[in-house]
Image (cartoon, rainbow, N blue to C red; front, top):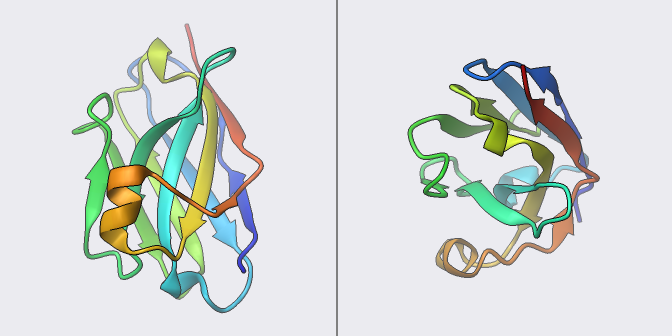
Amino acid sequence: QVQLVESGGGLVQPGGSLRLSCSASGRTFSTYNMGWFRQPLGKERKFVAAISWSGGSTYYGASVEGRFTISRDNAKNTLYLQMNSLKPEDTGVYYCAASRLDTVVVVTTHRFEVWGQGTLVTVSS
């Protein structure tokens, strides 16, 4: 199975932008549906966005719809999350995740088998 490593987190002011990357090891990245989750300090982890294995379909949580964009480059084994118009409530540890379950199952249940270690995003002035 793939191994995932996130990068790109940091401190950004409200209204600013940040792009997260998730690098996957192995040659099977293109067979995985991928997702991003975030976990604010002391709270539960929540779904942010998902993308199908081909990149043809994307799905977003209501709180980030229209501000965040998930994408992938299968040739580079990399998943991205472009975050614009950031708000303080976007603060948290962001995790990328991979799943070989059917895309419909992944989107409806948010079940992923492989997780990265997370990268911290802090939105503050």
